[in-house]
Image (cartoon, rainbow, N blue to C red):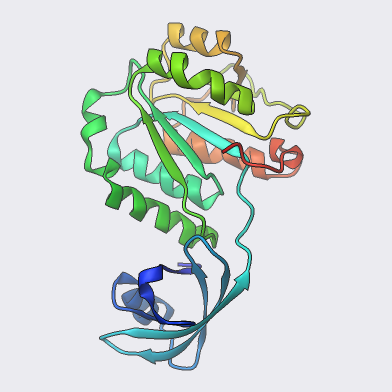
Length: 253
């Protein structure tokens, strides 16, 4: 845990918070902190700063909190991905959040099992846990969002035109060679819409639909990667030197 996240309910007074859940256990057993020490903290939806430990025992962690620094800027990417099986979904959300993604859109596709849409991993408490773990890792405080669009055709008819107009659309697909845009987002675009398919990839008619919808096809090479691996690799290109994110400063919300 790189950042101890605090919710409004944790505060018992102005600048004073008490924790009694997994965060208490983590600070005691992993950080092995002691009274008087200072931890890096952040208020969900707000600033980051420091929390001085006033009390630490089996029952509670009490902190004197002062937060004044802004959280890191978001990655200007909307991640559109075919809903994967639940364990993979948790990894995608956690790792994408840690890398700065604030808008996730899960969609249906031919190779997406219908049962995935009723998974416990899509319940509000499960999504919050995945987002919290990502924020703690990335030292961030701004909670992401997840939209669900189970029907592929309806998504392209009802949602895609708006998304397409909000940024540069890229469809990630396995290819014979590494193909990646060398220039930043075109002038007037606020960010990038990154589309990632299911484990076996989009079927050919679906790929054609993405192309017809204005997507530029990019590739990391000929190997077929797991969804969570592909997402991290693709986002890594966008936050590294010379990547697309260098020219984009506003997240397309």
